[in-house]
Amino acid sequence: MHKIKAVLLVCMLAMPLLALADGIASLKKFYKETHAMRADFYQLVTDRKGQKIQEVSGQMQLQRPNKFRWDYKKPFEQQIISDGTSVWLYDPELAQVTVRELSKALGASPAALLAGEDSLDKNFKLVTAYRKGNLEWVSTNPKDSDSGFNKISLGFKGELLQEMDMIDSFGHQTKIVFSNLEHNPAIEAKAFLFKPPKGVDVVGE
Image 1 (tube, helix red, strand yellow):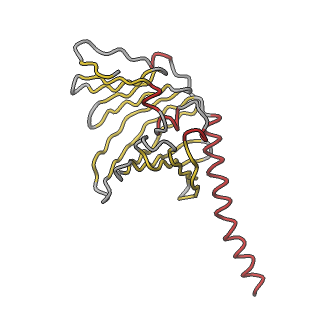
Image 2 (cartoon, helix red, strand yellow):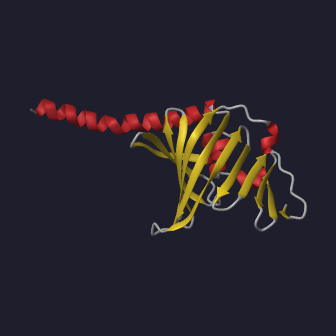
Image 3 (spheres, helix red, strand yellow):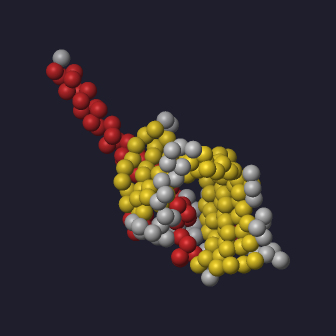
């Protein structure tokens, strides 16, 4: 009887260690082997009390290093595009474009975690890894206290990123679920180029 209990205890202690190894392995494999990605996404933002603040959907594309675009389509339109040098945020409803230098906009942000060229260890600290449902999760803390985020978690199925869960400095939670995901697709260079439409205000650096 004591032997059975001992075996069960060993198994229970080993399970978190295995999950930790699997989660971190998934993140490092994604970071090493994912050169491009295209997917539809659903994004939900809630406050500290769990009340819905925002619910949007659209399509995202990324290409390492440092090129990405997020096209928000419902319930409003907005574009966030990085050409590798600058990050452009275009709001058609406001007829306004905000532009920032990539180095100042990226830092230890979620975009840097996905598309950045720097090593993981430079900008993020891996704090925990666990299995939830059918996904392997890894939680990271941005090393830059001014990043605006306290914790960023990524959920993987194999080497494919399925979900992101982020807590910002205000305690708001942003959950992003990816679907119709394409791993390392061929993406035309023009997808990451942005030219402000005529008649819009351009603000920024």
